[in-house]
Image (cartoon, rainbow, N blue to C red; front, side, top):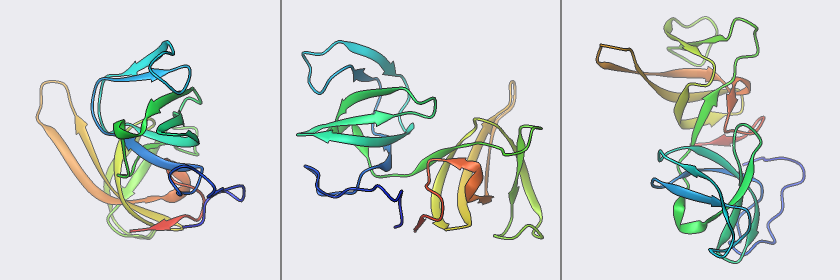
Length: 162
């Protein structure tokens, strides 16, 4: 799994830093330091939120969210599942969810900026994802397909996994 060139492995967990994970439960207190004696900076009210672990101290993980905010959470509140946010490169704020890993494949859906997706796998160029959308007054819809990897926050450039 290629990550950033500055990835480290000399960590309490033995895993590389930085790395992406998701929140395990809700609510989750994010603290200003690595321990319960530190103040709560903010709280995650939903589970499955993608975050980037940027530092480790004992059983505490310093995380960064999509907005760049950083804080500390206990390792038990995080899981290895992958999720991300749609981050369109184009100004119109939407990207196409393709039926296959090709620009020539049919359109499954059009996704707006900031939509959370579950990431199944990435090949360095494309990621297979599932997106769920709730339209007011209607049932939720779930779409599976492929997005350009560069248009997701929650994976590194050229990262590969399945």
